[in-house]
Image (cartoon, rainbow, N blue to C red; front, side, top):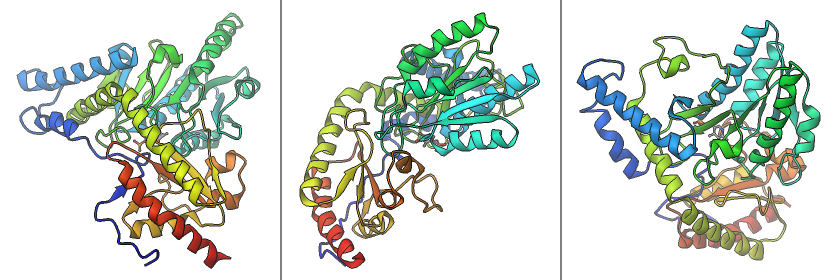
Length: 403
Ligand SMILES: *Cc1c(COP(=O)(O)O)cnc(C)c1O
């Protein structure tokens, strides 16, 4: 093995943007809802009531965190489902009411949950526009403005990007769109709904839907130390949304099916913990991340930072290590028990250059040499110091053998 350093016994997990472990505090609060309080929330007897009251409590807590009303929150089975409900839900409701299809807008760096929802609707005859971002991955209001059409129905822009951590100007877009919508109503044009995919942001940024000016917001549990396959969609009162799942009418008819009570309880607890500790944890992670990046650039030449320096999630570092194949590096690091990612983990079978890195204007070559380190609650400085012992000689060796 090269370099000749012993693999770490402890797994050094630096892929918190892919998913997080379940926080033991979250697990503890979920446990009774699989066992003692297993009732169906729709049942009228006490056992059912226990379950429905737990959901009501969870909904109330999340409403408070997000400055929304409890009845504006729909529990789903994850971020992908929330995003699908937002996009298809708005599109289907529009089509049903107007008997025609319209126009949808998103940024070029959205998660595939958004991009492939738009692709599927395009196959059905919807028009779609992807708005470019700048070199740092930030969408420009001017570019959004020029993409608007009379038949535009929805804009979807992520709160923070999963690959490069860029934070988008959601509140600024929300404010502008509210003004624009006021003039559209006067012209008898359909309202343009605003959805934000907040799956990467929920652990680090403020989730105040009023300040953000959004109509729809997707959040999931698996990125915030909550249970996987849990999520929610904020749906502002008055938003015309059609369900994608039909059945018993749970979640105000927007998401039928017996509720995942432990999951909902766990999601609320995970969100509460994340939001409570976020200022302090953000400072800690920023410091660790910046230490790691500073040391890395000192020891390894020809590194490019992907994304923004200032408008960036505190735990994200994405770099292109030029002339090194990111995927080889990932596998070598894994042999030392270090877990990192290249591109997005959400498309495991795909080794094309990342659409996000390319959208920043990087070459295919630089995109294929990108590596993402995302730090989390268990990350300590000594873990990063260990990575810094491995990475520089490893990069040197990979460059030497590639040359
Ligand atoms: C992870 C993620 C999703 C998908 O969420 P799942 O819970 O895995 O379905 C969507 N958008 C972003 C930005 C994500 O990071």
